[in-house]
Length: 387
Figure 1 (cartoon, one colour):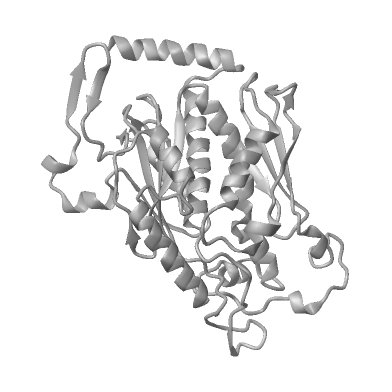
Figure 2 (cartoon, rainbow, N blue to C red):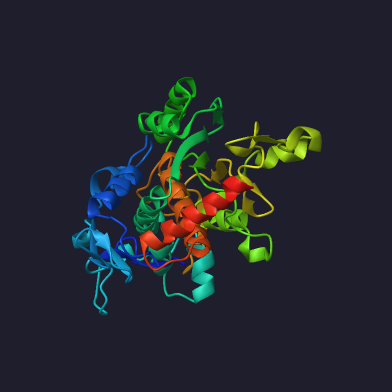
């Protein structure tokens, strides 16, 4: 089964990811990873760092030879282009540095104060460096490998923005290819051109006021066969895995599957997806309120996840807080940041969903090589066709 770790700080020398469990023989290149990293940097409302400083480029340092995985752990390194400006502040060895970089005013909504208290830290920078959403670049790198693996089994993943700052997009029943094309051509990754314009306008207004905006993005996984995940134990449920992964994204505050919170407003006769059968293609539904998962198991329909992202807590016009040294009221640090990260968060959402789906897929169709996993997978599809 696939597992991974990430390491590195926001202003450190580099981010590192190690992925274990990827089967032998998967075609992969640094270009595959860099394509996803560039997608993460885009989106109307991103700040100076994402646009001009974080020109991320991945380097694979282990686990790949001659263009394919060799079953050993894959190591990916993403160097921080801004490291030269932070070498003294982030030095491994204890040295003197400019004290203006010592942060003592925790930002409301950030991990600053909670982390400072938890670790009995000397200063807030020890907390914010790792708590920063910069870490997600490493997870997008991991997700790019998992997306490439899933494609070998006909599984595609896309995302789009559902809402920003209260502006809701009209929902359309697009196929996966249409979602990908439309979202990639939108500055805010929105499928509704009318809502797109309003979203961009409200982002501009927030930027002028030194404020930030949150919203909701949706991740769609297409081609997932029935049978991934399990109801047998609480921690084997696929929707539980996906919800945990999405909630682990910095600034995520809520997750729903399918119709999600609307389930509380509908009677069972309106909510549940009726089951049909067609000879030659098998079981299917005409609706998908379940979001492709029933009882913790994929049911063969599109898996649809929604994730609510709060406004970024780093404001150009900061809120009030308390200085941890003097205990006096002060304004929080005015840190360089994005105005709205919802479009980029959707790309991160794709990555973590891909990772979880790759985990359960390789667990169910276990094999040491890609060809063996495919053999097991195709055998299972033949069983499904006979049911």
